[in-house]
Image: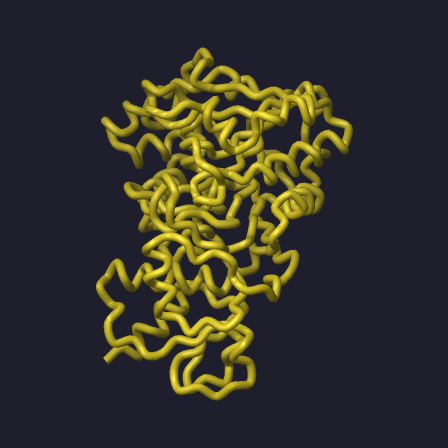
Length: 371
């Protein structure tokens, strides 16, 4: 389960778009994943099906993302019978129901792959820097692991993505113990016990601040990387968070699960955000924050970054007395008296550059002009 070393190992591929199946296949091809799978290896795909909800609510991995990964592997000659889609939903929910609600229960008939509820698996003991963790045997014995998390907020850890997604690979008793004995410490140690070979992040519409969904933020992007800690560090920045604000990330780096440091040169952008209007405004908190934006044809990436920036200001009680905020291609070439967010709003009296600007830059700019 160790990551194969290569030129992409320290880098992250980023793609924008609205077709998750095609985007997943493009990422798989660009990273040459099928060629990295050892001959004859069993392949485990680990989506996030924490609850039985459709991906549109911001909690679970899009079915099309998993389908794109399966198709990429099978089209490259990897036997469908060697591929397992495995997950163990959180304590109190039913994995089989999650497979059905998301439509992944059609995969065996469509592709010939296996679905497996990891809650029904036996476990093996894996040593970590802080003690033994029981890991589902199917995971421990997999020849190649493809992690398919959702980029989303979390009520206890602020964000959840690559590292924490592997929590579905342990028995329910271990999940309870993690919470009882210190969630951050044990999630960080899990990053050592189960380190996926590659991680493809579903960032299409992850929830703003809750792992169960309900407040999806349309971002229409996906990422791929070989270092789950580094991926999570970048995801934090996309959500307007410092990586060190998520306690398990510096711990995971200290334990040897990956590297928390990341620079702009580590991000390989395969394309630019699509010039379409952001599609989703659902969720009460997202709708409330969106009312602060003078949105005219904002692309999803710029819109999502602005929402995450406003959420950070909201968390700190700093939303009062903000000037008019302009965002979107409809403001190109228009002089406005307010703050423009992104390159399209460059004629605003003050603007935050970038395409899209990151949430951290938006937060810093808005704090600088507060009375």
